Image (cartoon, rainbow, N blue to C red):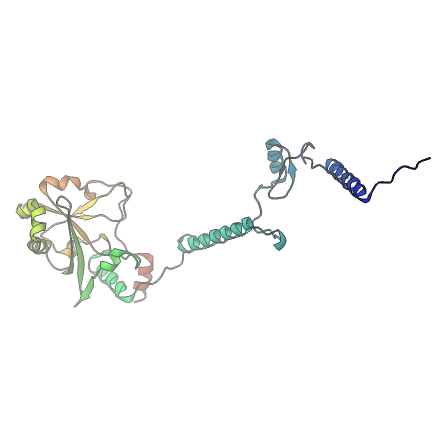
Length: 294
């Protein structure tokens, strides 16, 4: 009687690997993930708590029952062996968002209601003199603003000497004058401005240069108003700059707008309306603290 041949070592290895694959498949089938809500085959895993679900309805039921947000915990510990590039990007974005929140809280006056940075003493002196002489609410912009850099307003012998911007919109002419005494009459200042125009500027502003002085209108933009409702104060050329600016708000330095009678209609006057946006000139709270300490 002939005995059956025994399998070779190669055949034994093949049989063992086949059995191992089959056992793995059967084990995977036995422990297939189930939905924690309806016990069906699960398709999804909650990024927050890793709970298994099978459909959108089950996801909603899970959130309502447990109060889980479904959002991944961005601060959860991740072992170094499982740390990926996606985790690195997530951490970087989290740090950026944290920096933005901190910066926003520093800038927010409601979150940080305490007194802001103190102005240099020379600017505080300008505010004091402007307020005490004519109740002018003088405000200053941060140092990086170009208008702040152009401002050369100063005090000479107890009198404000303004930097004054002049705009002639119908001729597209813009001027900047320094060292203008607040006691000077507005009409004298305008005479000097028109006389000092270059030939090119006079040619562009010929309508204004050739008109009689009585036909010339001067306006100052009203501050602290909505951007969609700009209003202007009409100034009196027979009064001084100090009298014209009385009880008005000025940011950095005044800007005067010149127009002839034909173009004065483009300037909506603040005096012609009474709205809830009308703001009286008054001292800022931080300046009042400084002023009261004197």
